Length: 179
Ligand code: IMP
Ligand code: MG
Image (cartoon, rainbow, N blue to C red; front, top):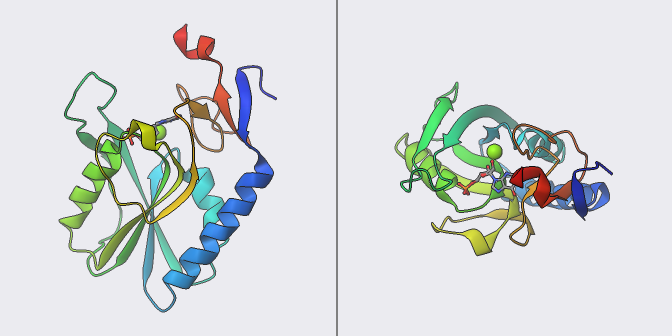
């Protein structure tokens, strides 16, 4: 285990099993529809790569990068688009793939923005969900694991751009982010 990890919250095996279940459900729900998977960079990349291979219907993929000004410095929680989608989402069934739903601000603003582009439908799929931290209600269609209010890293999730490559999801030792 990585020396900065206090405890493994979700093992590789648990993640693999859950991702397969989510992929099967999505394949069932979107059968016969044009599905566009929108991956939010960077945290969702590893989850999306695994999830996509568990979806057995035709899909298109695109990427969007956002930065959230949450974290107390700006209460508005306005989301800035760092890299926009490369394709139009008009009349498409959009499924947003997110790593973790925390305050809800990022997804709330992203949904608002994408809805102005006239998609056929727009839904959210998140691997992790921290309901205790929610400030804005966001409709989640697919949610992998509900987790406690702890800062987690690994499987795409970072602290200061590190730990994304850990194959499990672990709770970071507080001394790492307090320093
Ligand atoms: P929200 O807008 O507060 O819902 O924030 C969602 C974003 O915050 C996620 O996409 C992550 O980048 C980040 N985030 C929230 N909680 C954690 C965590 O426990 N570990 C790593 N990143 C997190
Ligand atoms: Mg992030």
